[in-house]
Amino acid sequence: MRRLLTAALISLLPLMAVAQDLSEDEIKDLALEAIIENPQIIIEALSILQEQRNAAAAAAQAEFLTEQRAVLESDPNAPFMGNPEGDAVVVEFFDYNCPHCKRAAVNVKELIAADSDLRVVYREWPILGAGSVFAARAALAARAQGKYEEMHVGLMEMRGQADEASVLALARSVGLDVDQLVTDMQSEEVTSHLATSDQLAQSLGFTGTPAFVIGDALVPGVASVSDLQTYIAEARSAVEGD
Image (cartoon, rainbow, N blue to C red; front, side, top):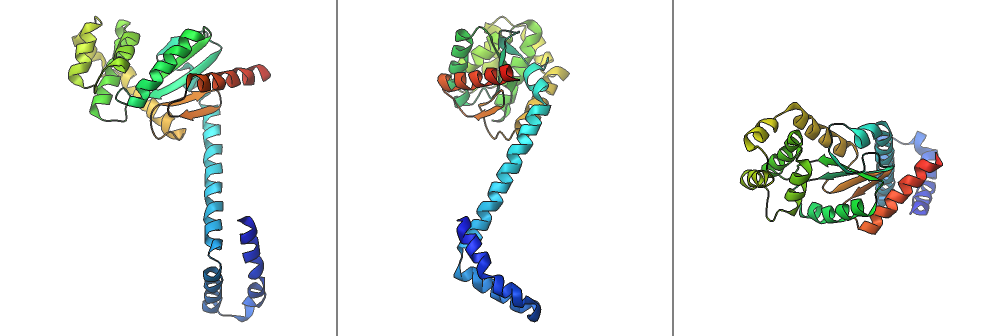
């Protein structure tokens, strides 16, 4: 395709050479005629523009990832499971009403069980409606009563959609003080976590859940256990090489 563009530009050289003797309208007409005769010029130009935009977006995401590494991997306001001193970190963005996230949760559980040096940081990112927001707030608020893991696992294993009734029923079943939970759901810590998750996810270019950050890798969608382990191994190798 680039050869086509180069050839097209070469074909316009005579036009450029005599452009000083032509009016602006005549130049436009000749340029339009060249494009009509060789429409690949437009296709190639759009392709190059998209490549440039993709490269710029990737560079911006990489820069943001470097700048926000500590927030992503060590935010004290983000719950985690696994080894608190783990030498590898997986950051997961998820929504409790996302069926793909529930599939991914099974893989993440297996990862944690198989890797004693892994820490998984959870970023609640409720993007699928009011029920998702209520569930995320409830899970985060459960931290104040030491029950985040129970709520997280219960919500991921819940059949059907999470909504106010089903979330509060789960909260009672895991032994939470529901009145206190509802109060804590509006805390600054909970609100701040959700706002930070949204800002991080959008800056990293994520458009849906689940999505993972593993080292320098951005992994949207459900990934197999083996694929996740490969990303983790690459992240460890990168740290050892520094």
